[in-house]
Image (cartoon, rainbow, N blue to C red; front, side, top):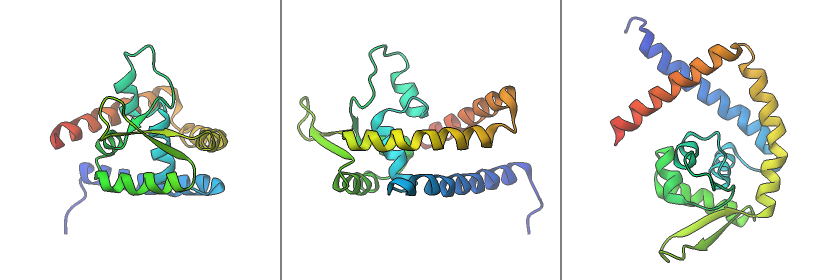
Length: 165
């Protein structure tokens, strides 16, 4: 049996935290009939600026617009999951009338994803619950520790992304 080690404990704590956040997301999103996974995909498609991938991709672009379009392959890359996994979720969201797909005019093999007006309405309906839950969760840290935690997690994410590249 292994002895306790800070690195291992940290990884396992982050995994438990992720599971707890996923469960909280399910509770919030089930009000509008979607899952946390579907909600996250919708946030990517809409272009939520709080998503690290979106922020890095568009931070220099002063003409960024919400719901301007996203490729399923970009979402799969950002989440480090297979393209078919994302496609299955997209197909379900499309069947619910929350996402629409249009052909990319520059490459007709690619489909641009956008939220429908109903999809945007669902995100707007969930947003106050998300905001309230996040403020309650992170209020125990205070602003300085919250910013330090975010910085540390962003650094760790970059290390993992470089290792997987």
